[in-house]
Amino acid sequence: MSVTIEESNLLTWAEYLNLPYETRNADLIDGRMVMNAPSAQHERILRRLLGALDNWLLTAGRLGEATTQQPVKISERRGYQPDMSWFPIEQCTGQDEDAAFSGLPAIVVEVLSPSTRTFDVVRKRHDYDRLGIAEFWIIDPKSTSILVMSRPVDGEPFEESEFADDDELTSPVLPGFAVTVASLFRA
Image (cartoon, rainbow, N blue to C red):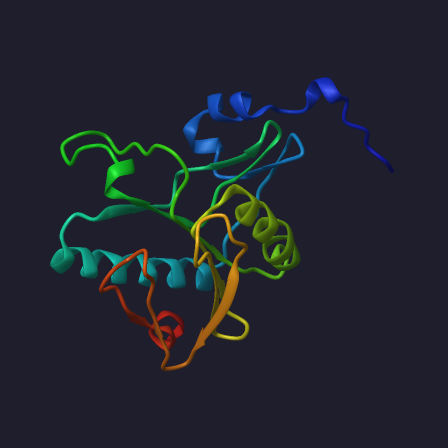
C-alpha cells in the first residue's frame, strides 16, 4: 500500500520548532519527522563522551557547552537533532540563565545505528559540510572507531581523520580535550 502525504501536511522548520519539546527529539527530513530510538550501546557511548567533556571542562573552565537537545536547521523543511552538539562560549547564554544557544554548533556528533548509517554518513555529512560546521564526528559502534570530518580553513570542504583503539580523540575546537577512543566503547 502506498501512502501519499500532501504538501500541506509537511512540516516547516518553524512548525517543527513549535512542537512540544518532548516530541521534537527527531529529525525533520523533507517536511516529515523521522524518529530513530537509540540503543543502549548508543546511549552508553554518548554518556561517556559527555562525561569526558564535563571532566575536561572542570579543569579547562567554561569554554562552551555540549548539548543533546539543540536541533540544527538545514533548510525550510530539513533539520537534524544531532546526538550531541558543541557550542563555543560566545554562542551560549550566561551560567545562571536557562541554556540557550545561538548560531551553528562548532561540533556535531552522530552515533551510528544500523537503520541510519547511510543517511548519517552521506546526507548529514553533505548537509553539515555545506552549512560550514567546523567538525562532524561520526562514532561507529560497529567498527569501534570515530571518523572526524574537520574544516582546516573556513570555506574549505571537510577533511577526514579516523581514530580507533588507543588513539586519543582531540580537536582544535576543544583545546586540551582528549579522550581515548577505546574508553568510549568499553563494555
